[in-house]
Image (cartoon, rainbow, N blue to C red; front, side, top):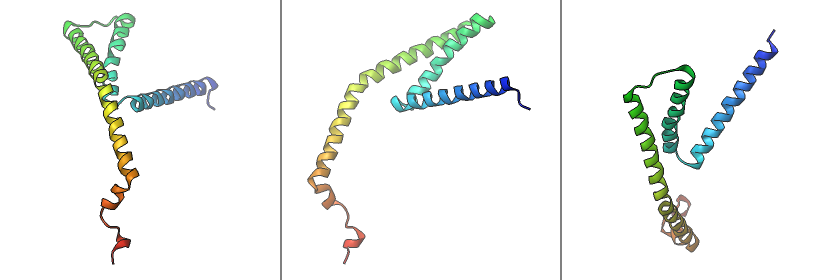
Length: 120
């Protein structure tokens, strides 16, 4: 028979996996897939620091420089993303208003190709 503590552990781990997956999908929905890639690379930094503290791993100079460049790249991405955000949202708003005006005027419906039912 299945041990109750093993079953509880499996259920706990399954819940954790589902929670992580849902959180990742929500982050993708709120930001972008590129942001997930940047966060994924930045995520390796605390994992490495934990390995140094808890497992006494050594980090060589080249690895430390790589983590530094990774952090710098993440910060550059965030800066570029925030600098682009107001411009992008205003363009998106004006484009959506233009589409709504075209649809509302009826001009877009008459300019399209004739439908098969309208052919003689």
